[in-house]
Length: 326
Picture 1 (cartoon, rainbow, N blue to C red):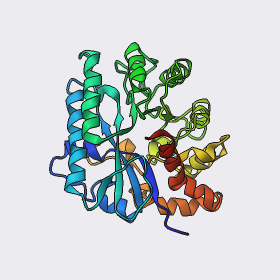
Picture 2 (cartoon, rainbow, N blue to C red):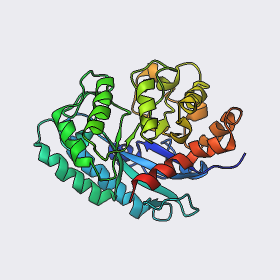
Picture 3 (cartoon, helix red, strand yellow):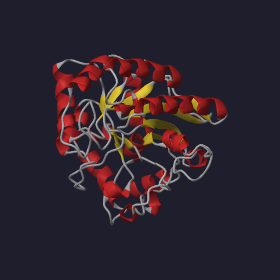
Picture 4 (tube, helix red, strand yellow):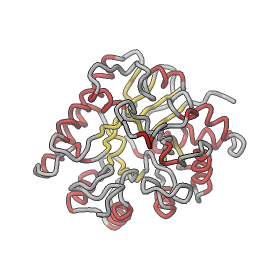
């Protein structure tokens, strides 16, 4: 079994560094810390800027974009900015930013124009955004999150219009079912040039959870030449079975055209300040950090070909980058 280069579509290192000022990116308290990324042969890691629905959301979004910029300076021998020509290399771990919740552009009370100004500031700091998720778990001015029922709101339509042609995907990982439907409908009917992905989501047919994609939405992402990054969190796999991760991946490959869409989106975040005992362990030991990708691929080799494993590990994400970045 060869050591595949890995592209992962989502981790929360930036907000971990924001909330833990003494922490370092090259520590091992975080599942996607630099030593784990290097040992796991991660060629490209998407770094999410996460914000909750709160008054300070836009300030925290901009601060995390500065943290991202500083990572490239402080760890110049290990991290580098991925660009449209990205291919796995030996020179280090590529990075690209994303926005998990558009609350990071403006809070609920700011003028919407601030969102576009702050988006340009963030882009100046991070170079490019792989994707924007409009919501997290809760509802905000753009639409409904996973635990809400609202669909796409007028501010969400305006943001989609603004994103069109800017090489930024819209991420359905944290949408309500109504918001996912409305985004797909609005982008299609408006003819917007906005790629659609689910950066860190699993499948509801395998595990019935609102964080997981319906078959209809998953198939639409595939049909639009998007990506689906499988999530490693136990709560979204199956509370009792680590093998469920393999079931989710195999299900994705079973979708029509799914071989071209499946990727990793492990969703590593800092669990040390989450006291809810019902969530422990957050990850099964087989999936708990970025060294585990190769073992997962080895387990999958019973059902997937070498070509399919390469597609999952990195080639699908490379294809997406080549098709959508300039």
